[in-house]
Length: 325
Image (cartoon, rainbow, N blue to C red; front, side, top):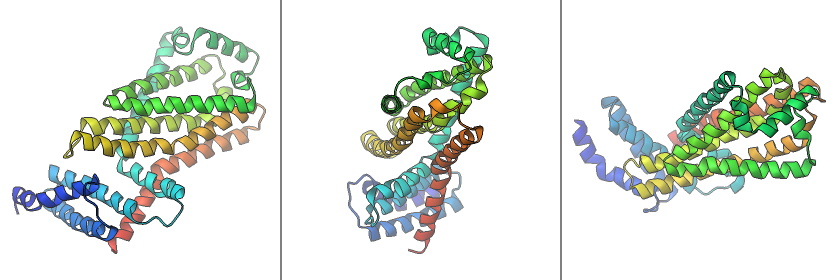
């Protein structure tokens, strides 16, 4: 069958599935499963006879959306919060996984810009971090306490301020995505350049190792969450710029709903990062090195597993279950 005839034959059905996805047509879980199986058959046909066609890309995207709709519509027997973090967010991360890779790509490029700028311009770090902060940190380094800035104030007061500040930063990274993703990239650029300049600054004064023992105790969750929030902002921006077959308004509604859930998933990590910074980082140089490493790499393993590996596990499991419907 020619591709044009294939599209003409199934167009109305696919448009109807789009209406189900955006919520204009209601279907029960059994009907959704039937739609999904039917759509997968169309996708398999397209992959066989039109492997490089836009039709195949479209059907693959539509399949992933209806696949999610099935499990959102089915009655959730378990705790709603548990379902949100253990199934809903992982499925969203699987669907939008390429945006997480984009966000990390930009993050590394922007951090490198900050690093190189600090190498070739010794005044650059003062421009980014502020002269007062730089001078204070230099004095702390001379005293043998590079993480002295984290020892100021009370534990609980410092944690509360840090958590609120980081949530605000994360919200900006996400919300600025409404400007077509450009606002998100600009906010990510600012924070990444700051990180690159910050790290080279400690290297230049021979305190990189000691500073890393403290900074990355909380920085692992904090920085990784920042990148995920940027990914959510890019998803929001893409929903406006690239509506595909949806109206721009419906595409934005769908993109906002999905990206906001991804943003919300970072809040617990941000809170834990703030608690670590307020209660643990101040003792970074007093702790045995092995404790520092356990916390740093333990946090890295947890958040990497949750956003990169676990989504594939959940998606594979649900697809296996669907195969026997």
